Every structure is written in C-alpha cells, then in structure tokens.
Length: 304
Length: 330
Image 1 (cartoon, rainbow over the protein chains, first blue to last red):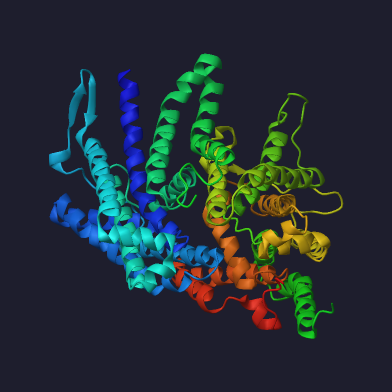
Image 2 (image 1 turned 90 degrees about the horizontal axis):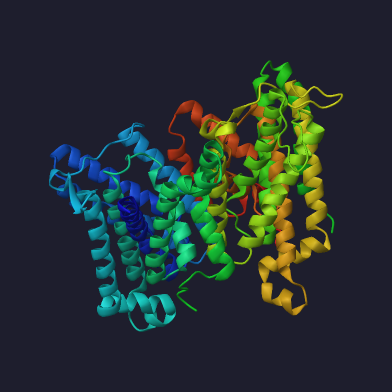
C-alpha cells in the first residue's frame, strides 16, 4: 500500500512536469494554429541556464530566477525571427522549420556546454525526505515540484478566467480577425503567449533538472510525451492538458512499477519481465490509441 | 501530358549519372563513393515513399522512420535466427530464420506495410496537427518496443556479419549491391509514377486539396488515404531492409524520430510533390551532411538555420529550381 502511494506521487510528479510543458504548447497550438516541435528546446534551455547559474553561484533560486526569463526571451526571439513568418503557412512548413530549430539548439548547447551531461543539485533547503504517513518517506524536492505545479495550474486558471490578458487570449483563440479589429495588438499578444508558453517549458526544465540529467536532446523525449498529452486532452484546452498530463504521468509510472509484478502472477519470471518491459514502455501510446478510437479530437476539445 | 524538355533532360542525366557512378568511382580510385551512394539510393527510396504522403496525399507523417526500422529489423531478426539455428517462432507454425534476400526483403515490405495499416487506420481518424503528433507518437512507441526487445540487443541492436544472399548476385560486393539498390529505386519510382498518374493518384491529390468536394463526388477518401499510407510504409520497409544489408547492423536508432525529420528534409530540399525531387534531395542532404561533418563536428548548427531559410524562402525545392516546375500538386 505504501508502495502504491509512493508510485502515485511519482506519477503525479511526472504528470505535473508534463502539464507545464503541455499547457504552454497547447496554447500555442490552439491560439496560433502553429505546430511547434521546438518546444522541448526551451525546456532544455531552462534546465541548462539554471544548472549553470546555480553551479556558479550555488543558489538554486537565483538559477530559477535567471532561467525563467531566459527561456521566455529565447521563445519570444524565436517567435519574432522565425515562427511569425510561418503562421499563415502549411503545417508541413512549420514542422520542418521547427525541426531545423531543434537541430540548431541541440547542437548549440553541445558547443556551449559540451557533450557531458550537467547535474543540478537539489537545493539544500529542499533536500532530504519527510515521513508523509507512517512508513512512507518521500523526498521533499518532489513534493515541492508537485506543489509548484498545482500553484501554476491555479495561476493559469486565474489568468485566463479573471484577467484582461486572459480574456484577450481566449478571444484571440476563437476569432483572430475580430480581436484585431477591436484594437488589440494581435502580433504582440502572440509573442507574449509564445513567451509565456516557453517560460512554462523552462520552468518544467528547471524542475526536472535535479531529477534527470541536463543534456542536449533532453527536450525531445519530453516533447513526444507532451504530444501524447495534448492528443489525449485535445488541442488548445488547458483543462485537457491537466487531465491528459495526469493520466499519462500515472499510467506511465504505475505501468513501469507494477506491470512486472502483475505479469509474474501469470507467466514465468523471464517471460513476465520481457513482456512487462515492452508493454509498460508502450502503455501511454496504447492509452492514446484508445482515446483516439473513442474521441478522435481528444477528451476536451477546445472548439467543439 | 508530355513532360517538358528540361525535366526529361534532368531525369535522363540523373539516371545516366547513377548508372555510371560505380565505374567512375572505381576509375577515380574512390570506391568509398560506391558505398556512400548506395546509402543515398536507399534513403531515396524512403524519401520517395514519404513524398507520396507529404507531397501527394497531404498527410504529414512525422513517424516514417518507424517503417524503415521495422523493415530493417525483419532482415536483422531473420538473420539472427538463421545464424543461431533456431526458428523465429514455432507457434502456430514453425518459421525458420533466413538470409535469402528473396524471402527477407519481401517480408520486410509486408511487415512494414502491415504496421502502416494498423497505425494508419488509427491515425487517419484525425487530421491536421493531431495527425502529425500521433504519427510521431506511434513511431516512438515502436522505437520503445524495439528498445525493450532484450533478445535482439535492446538499445544496442543487432549485428548481421554479412549481407543477405541472392541467387546469381553477390550482395556482399559493393558494386553489385549498388546496382541492386539502383534497380529497386528505379522500380519503386516507376511504380510510384504509375500510381500518382492513375485514378488512385487523382483521388489522393484531390483529398489533399479538398476533402469535402471529394465526398460530394461520392468518394470516401479514408480508404484511399489508408492505402497510400500503407504503400508508403511498404516503400519505407524496403528501404529499411536494404539499409540493414548496407550497414550490416540494425538498432532502434533507425527509427528515432530525428530520422523521420531528416527524411522530411530530403523531400523538401528536393521538391515536394515530385518523384525525382526526393531522390535529388536525399543525395544533396547526405552529401551536405558528409561535407559539413568533414569540417566540423557541429554540422547541425549550420544545417538547422539552413533548413529554416529553405522553408521560408525556397519552397519549391531544388528540383523545382532545376526543371522550372513547382509543386505538381494540382
């Protein structure tokens, strides 16, 4: 039972990271109708900047404070230089251009930071573990990740439903020409939404830094999971991103943790382990296929 | 419809160049080029098959490498079982391993086509951005599936020790292997040409332009698009089977999504919606990669922005520039 709760928390924590990634990306998809493969690059930039600053100064918070604007600015520059020219083009052009951006950013980080992964230490005030329940000892850092994710989700909800900017973003998503005619600077709005999305990706990168290795190409494995989340949740829907991210995080983590045990009840050990390894690595994609058969537009399509 | 002179000239010149390349390379003492261009021919097959989807059917598949990988693994797995002297599977019937190209290459094609049938049937329930993301996600699933196959080397993949056998031809010889690949490339391009100029091709292109109009004509585009997806998967499987033979090595790296991206780049560089463009694109991309890699290990830092510039400014691709013919879509 303790083990189940522990794995649930782990799944929740993966889900939170995925939520931060997919919330930004689904906004960009939904509002600008642009497919951005390079979203993972901003996750990587966030992680690298934080690891570097924290390594130099010894302060994780300072690293975070530099990494967030850095990934937001990088995103806005990319939007201004490249993506802005692609809004009216076909998806294929957007895919190819952002694929080029991935190549560029991955190689650039190799030039700047080398091929060896960096390691970001858990800040001392978040290291250690606490006993949540009798016998359930869980790292504080991972709890902090979960807390930050929930706080961000709440902030996003507040921004969208209660502020003027959020209203403009929602309006821009449903009718771009109309909101332009009403005097909103749509270009600036797009750049800001893009920057907001990449900043969330940067935050996800920072929080994943102490858990995973910070290395070139780290953005792509999370990017593909993010795509799975968005396909499950529905494009352009923050609510879909929340549900999709939690589903994917839980299914992936619980599958890896418990499928081998379950399979051993039925098969002999070698077969069970091999089958469990295959199926648990494919579980989220099978989940995606199932959702697709049931609801091709995702669970919460934004424009239904 | 008579092809314009410049196009005919370009195609014949290209074909002649490809035919005499091994002789020229041996005369120049650069036999490395024969192996290099075999790789170009193989990637060209994969790129042409992808262009059927991207350029003709308007289906943006970002998971084409998966079918290349499946084809390669079929060859690899049959080779593994043939040298280990144990059947590939023994239920419901016994299937022995094999090194015979006449058996394993068609099997590679069939396996990839079957995977494309299953995945395509699911993916085609969606359009647009969803389709792109889902093809990528399923390709990644197949990637992880092969990574998890410990028996076949997992992450490290399988080494083949020798190429497949073919009666009367020694595939182990680089020149003969080159001509074998060239023969298959010509065959595949010919088939694809027949296909896109048939009624099937018209429907496929119509579906990419205006799906609703097709439906009004009483044509359900789903089946045609699925058939196109399967044919493209089969072509990729052939390329994969050849690639396994060429490098005598298969690994999950073959289905990494960056390879899918590179195949797309080849199609775009050469010319979207043409059959000869992707061949040219494969040659140019691999040559560019080779030359840049000679000068710097960080070649991607130049390739990336180059790609962005090509997308933004030179949409017609090299083939369009040379023949003066653009996107033949329409």
